[in-house]
Length: 90
Image 1 (tube, rainbow, N blue to C red):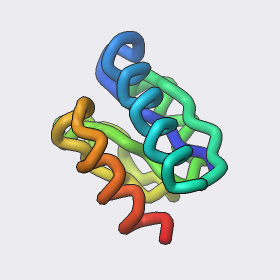
Image 2: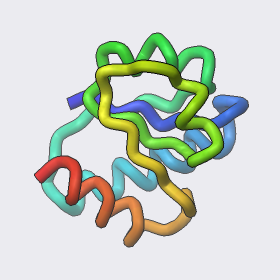
Image 3: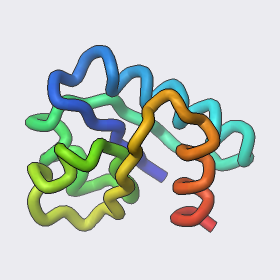
Image 4: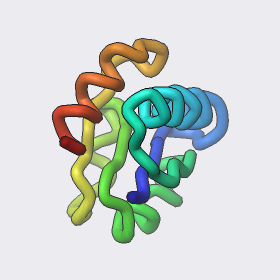
């Protein structure tokens, strides 16, 4: 499974979201490749991903993508990430 973690600038918060998503996926025993990306790169990466994790503000900027877009309100909240990934993946 391919997951793209997206933020506006592509450096700080997308890496944080990537790392937290990887922690949650490991806890759930789900094998996935998580990529951090800015919005420009994410538009292309989301074409081959199954899931995109991003903020509400950026979700609309992705346009039409085949990936399931999951809105994460707090990139630090592992419980929120876990709940939303669990709901989508299982």
